[in-house]
Length: 125
Image (tube, rainbow, N blue to C red):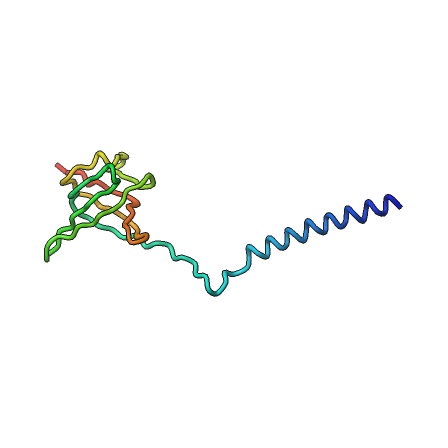
């Protein structure tokens, strides 16, 4: 009798584990409810121009893009994920100077432009 009871309890325990596992898998595979929308990945934009200002405390970079109708300033936030490169060399925000020619790739999040990468143009001689 004790053996039968032990086998029955073990079988119920295994059944409970399998049921929980299936419930977790079903929850992962279920589509998002109709009211919730998945956020589309942010579109990467680009600006090429001259550095107008560098603020290492605020971690920002202002780039001026010259246009036929004047000039347009772009203020980009720089964070620890931003890659700053001059050729194959990694640089820091503090290495940028007013007047440097740069190409900044950024995404817009919450109305702010967050730099993903900054390429400093080297002067060819």
